[in-house]
Length: 468
Image (cartoon, rainbow, N blue to C red; front, side, top):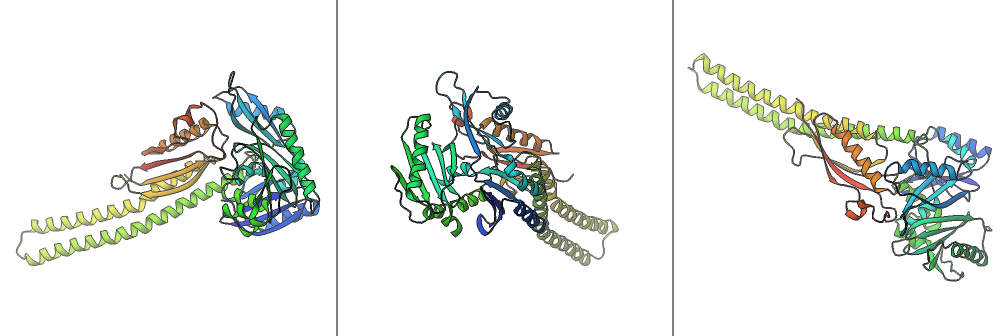
C-alpha cells in the first residue's frame, strides 16, 4: 500500500498523502520552473515514502496490434514491437488482450505510451532518490471503477472533473482506448453531449465495440443528470462509497483513482531503473520483517525458557532431596545422582539455544531471497509449527505477482524461480500449496484471456532444519 500518490495533470502536479488507502492531505505544484523547484524542496524536507505517479494528461496513445502467439521470449517480442511503435519515449506498456478466434489465432495486444516524456522529465528528476513503486495512467484505473455487471460488454465510461472530460472504452472490462478532452471550467450539458457523440461515432466507425451494442456511463459529482443520448448517469458518491472511498473520493473521480492506486499499486510505465529505489526499500522492509520475526521468536523463546528453567530447578530439588534422605550411600551413588542432574541442566540449555535460533535460521535467509524478487508482493507471512519436527522453523507464505503482463506462463515462471531460490537454502524444504491460476483452463492457454484485473496469487510452505 502506498503512502503517497502524485497526480500529474495538464497544468499541475498534486501530491496526495494517504493512510490505509484514504487521502489525508493534498496540495499542488504548478507545471512551471517555480513549481518544479518547489516540488524538489518539498521532497528534500519530506520523509522517503513509497510513491506512485498517476498520469491524467491527454498525451497518451493506444494501438491494438496482432502478433504471433509465442510462449518463449514473449516479453522480449512485446518490448521490441512497442519500441518500433513509440520510438520517442521510454514509457511504453504492452498488455495481451487475448487471441484471434480464427486463422493462426494470433495474440491481440494493446500497446500504449506516454508520448511526451519531456512533460514528465522535471518531476521524475526530483524523484530519482525516492522509492517510486509505479507509474500508471487514469485510463488503466478506469476498469477498476466499475462493478462486474457495469463493465460487462462494451462500455464507454465518461468521467467529468475540473481537468476536463475523460472517455475510456472498455470491452468486457479490458481497456481499449482512452482520451482526455479539455472543457470549459463550468461545462454545459451540450458540450459534454457533443464530445460523447464524437467518441461514439469514432468507435462505431472503427468497430471498436466488436459488433456489440455500446453502453455509455457518465460519472460526475453530485446528482448531475445526463442529457446525452443513450447515456446513463452514474453518481460519483455512490460509486466511491462502494469502493470504501474517503470524502475526497466522493467529490472528485481523480481522488477515487488515487485511492485505488494506493491500495493496489500496478506499474505500467516505470522503467527498471526508476523502480530501483523502491526495490531497495522492499529489501529493507524484508530485513525489518526478519527483525520483527526474530523479536517475536525471542519473546516466545523467553516463555519457553522460563518453563525449561523451572523443570531444571525441580530436577535439582528432587536430586537434593534424594541425597539428603540417603546418608550412608557409596560414593558411586552420589556421582550417579550428580550426573543425572547435569544431564537435566544440559538438556534445558540445549532447548533454550534451539528456541532462540529458530526464527533467525528461517527469516534471515527468506528476507534475502525475497529481496531478489521485487515482483513478488507479500500478502501474509505466518510462523507456524504445523507438521514440523521439533526444533524445525516453519513459515506459511501467501503472495501475489505485480506488475502482471497478462501472460499466465510468466507468473508460473516467477513462482518456479522463487521456489528454486528457496530450495537452494541450506536444509530448506518448500511445498507449493496453491499455484497462480490453478484451474486447467487458465493454464492451458486455450483462449489466452484472463478476467480483468486478476493478479496471480500463490501460497507456499517453507521449513528449514534447526541448528546442528
